View 1 (tube, rainbow, N blue to C red):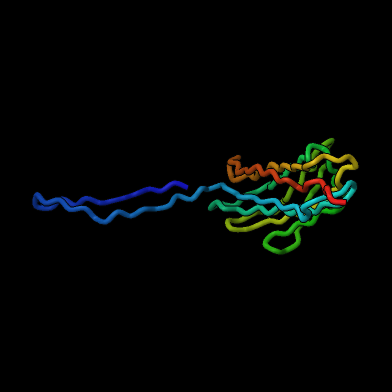
View 2 (cartoon, rainbow, N blue to C red; view 1 turned 45 degrees about the vertical axis):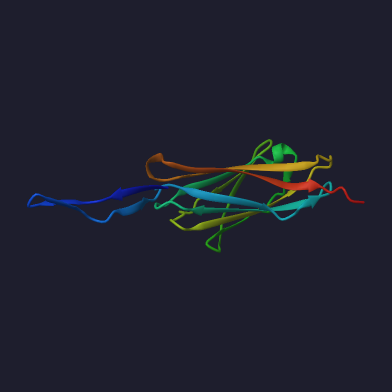
Length: 165
C-alpha cells in the first residue's frame, strides 16, 4: 500500500514555520488476499483430499463475480461432484461449479464487501499413479466497478506421496 505525506508551510511577517508531517495510507480500492490449505499432509492412491480456500476483500470497495479456477494438480486429481461448500462471513452461500478437462471453476454471485471473507471447501480424489508431490494452483479474480479486477494466484503442495510401509 502507498502512503502520502503532507506538511503545511506558513509564511507570516517574513517568518516561515512548518507544521508536523501527517502520513495517510492509501488503501487499494479493489484488492483481495487468498490462502489455500489441503487438509492432508500425505496421500495414498485414490484417497480424498479436502481443500479450503479463503478469500478476503482487503480493498476499500465491494467486489463482484468472485471466480476461483483450480487446476486440479494439472489434472492429476479429480473433483468430487457436489462436494463444494461455500460460506460468506460464516453464512452458507451457493457456489456455482463448472468442470472442464483439467480444471474446476467455482463462481460466487454474492457481493463481497470490504473485510468480508469467503470460504470455499471442496474435495478431490488423488491419482491411482504415484507422483511424489501434488501441487495444486488456483487463480482467483473478482470485479470491482467499471471492470476493475482484483486477483491472486496461489499454489499449494497438496500432499506428498506416502512412503511409509
